[in-house]
Length: 115
Image 1 (cartoon, one colour):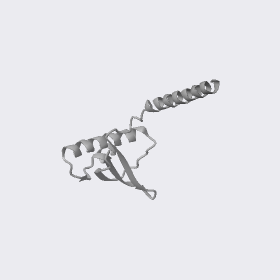
Image 2 (cartoon, one colour):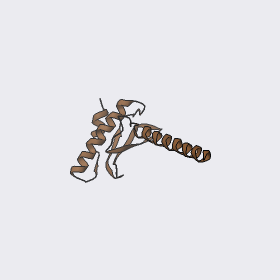
Image 3 (cartoon, rainbow, N blue to C red):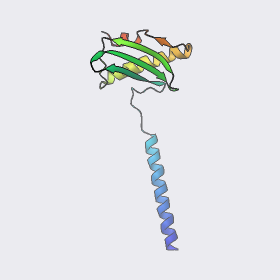
Image 4 (tube, rainbow, N blue to C red):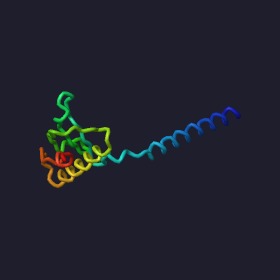
């Protein structure tokens, strides 16, 4: 009888700790610069850091916008750079949702980063 009680108690402890770990994991928040609508990708070359191609995708992995950005070096360590990219991404996705035609080089990103 004691063996069953010990085994039941051990299983209860393991199950409750696993459920607690899952709840803690669910509460983790994504950084503010991560969009819920999609994601961006930057293609660049180490030899020409001021020439980049920025791709915006929606959550279905559909390319919604592409822009060649010249004269801008993206410092992805800066939160402000990531927030600008998020803003441009969300504007591109809104435009895509209104008219799902692939658009290129509307200079949305260039306007946000050129001074």
